[in-house]
Length: 72
Image (cartoon, rainbow, N blue to C red):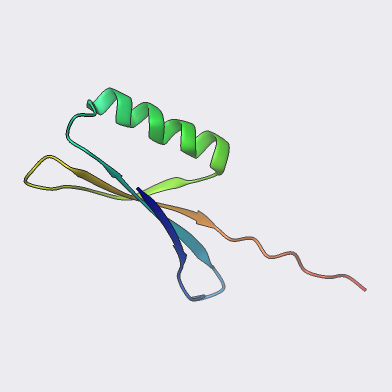
């Protein structure tokens, strides 16, 4: 399950966030490989990882939103 959203601009930097949830059946090595793949091909970086009492991993990824500036 993934969900992306945007945080309002603060001090000139705008970030896009994505929430990813992994069930406890996924080993840590598999989760690591999936997150590395997402980082290499999507430009995401790790923001936060929370492991719930039932073993579910909730990961929040972020990436900068780069706005193109028009030139005259």
